[in-house]
Length: 212
Image (cartoon, rainbow, N blue to C red; front, side, top):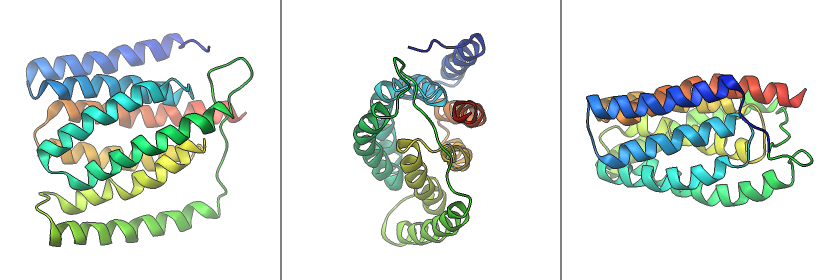
């Protein structure tokens, strides 16, 4: 098993402390703290390409879905059910791509011709989803909810298939989700997504190194 580098350990500690301090200063549902800390561990291990990311990922998805139910973020609820299902398949895919005698996945690069087409499709589907949520549900932030959901569907597929370009989409999703939870005044989730944004940059660098 590949151990965390000194920088990764410090980065993890900062993320966990950020969750605890935020919760102490602005208390919320205790599950926000639990979900946030699980999320910090999961995404950092994902940035390392470590298959143990799925262990924390399953727990984080369950707790986060509960929080979304409280806030009536219906698209977020749906995407987390999708996460849970695809992560089961993701464990199988990553196990077949691990370096020999290692917990680290072999990463790869997506074709440059595919990504622009994927981007246009994501924007169009996000607009349509936002319109449907606005028209047929009581979602308080329909378009923001949609634009954190549709790109995440594509990002999750790229993650499961071990493509580096997932990190572009995750950064977009995390920035918008940060705004969404800020408006909902759940600051533990804001802290989690702030850390996740930084982790997207870290993950991109690490996955690029892994390809080399």
